[in-house]
Length: 240
Image (cartoon, rainbow, N blue to C red; front, side):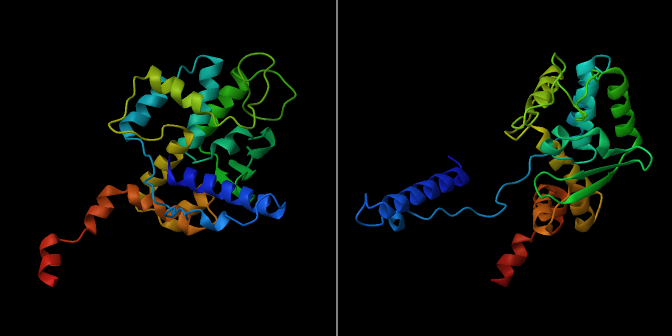
């Protein structure tokens, strides 16, 4: 199990033991006997797609079908604007400010407002879906299921199947194990921006981070930048 999983289980058991003590079922509070599980903050490296694989993924989408039009717009919102899966799933027609060429939402994770530019590429994909792929319905959510009754996605749907469907169709495999859902496309955008020299503050604004600490994790995926600050082993040995 991952450390985060173990820590959560231990925390649940600790709470249960305290409950048993409070009810008098246990004569001694055993919660203190459980080990402390250390979970390093931001210990993982973000999963990032190679640019060539991302191009192959988008090219594989059949944009002549209703499903393809919908999924193409969803993928672009993730890899071009960095929107989270939950914010894409709950995106409303009212969030699309065509007159200002912006998307304005309240982020589901942080509750903070976020305004992003509605680029030509993303805007054209959305228009194509809204005009030629989206069913006629009273729902205000932008993205709906392609089969009747054309409902919005369920609350627990992270849209992982959309990436998986077109990734397999494109025959994409990764050199090493990594996350492959919509969130990895968000990671990819942040890493590419960092590689281009975009300031952390700007990346944080695009991704809707409330703290720069959440943004700095992407420095771990910028291999070339890390290579530039690596210590020379000979210099280290000489200093010692």
